[in-house]
Every structure is written in C-alpha cells, then in structure tokens.
Length: 158
Image (tube, rainbow, N blue to C red; front, top):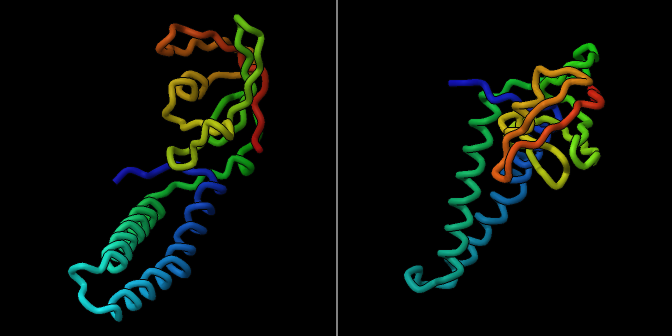
C-alpha cells in the first residue's frame, strides 16, 4: 500500500482523535447501549438504535485512523535544511500577479488540509503548481475561472 505523507502536526492530531475515540467516546457509547437495553424491548427502542449507530460510526472512524497511521510517512519539515524550493510541509507566500494580493499557504497531507486555516493538500492544483519551484518563480494555476499567475515570494520551514 502507498505511504500517506503527513506533517508531524497532522499525525499528532490523528493520534489525539484516536485516543479520544478509544478512551472517551467508546466507553460513553457502551454505557448508552447498556442503559438503553435496561429500558426493555429493543425493537422499538430509539435510544438503543441511536447508540448502536453511534457505535458503528465511532468504530469505523477508529479503523480508518488506525489504517492511515499504519501507512503514514511523517515528514518533519523543520528537520530539512531551509532553502528557496517549495516542498511538502513548507509554508509559502505567493503573490497574485494580477491583483497584487499576497496569500500564505502551508502544504500538507490530504487529512490535514483546511482552506480556512490556509492549509492546502499537496494534491491541490495550487500545491502541485508550487512544489518544486523556487522563490521568484512564476507559476500558473488552472482554475475553473481561468488561469491565475502567482509569484513565489517566500518559502519557510515552520
């Protein structure tokens, strides 16, 4: 199976979620199922069915996270010597050549991406255009509304 690239922060976040699911959610759901069973007839017991559904979602998410963590390739960008080249895990300042607007993005794994926090997946069109380029390079990003040119202003390993 292919390795899943992820930053140190992303891997830690998944581990925390897994820990929460196993130590907090799982016992809470088991308790809710036991309590619902005490109410009698399970066929018409909505609380029981809701708790079982929650259990299914929680167990599915636990398996999903464990699978991802089993195939993760953690990339600690702070251990890589800083340079002007855009790589996975780095933070990039880019300038829209047409509007002169500056945007800062951190290139992360799929599970970590959050556009509102300016974290973009390494598989996104912007990240694919940026990776491998250097400060001062102009990249063209194809979007549904047309092509946008960006100039790479700064690369940081944060």
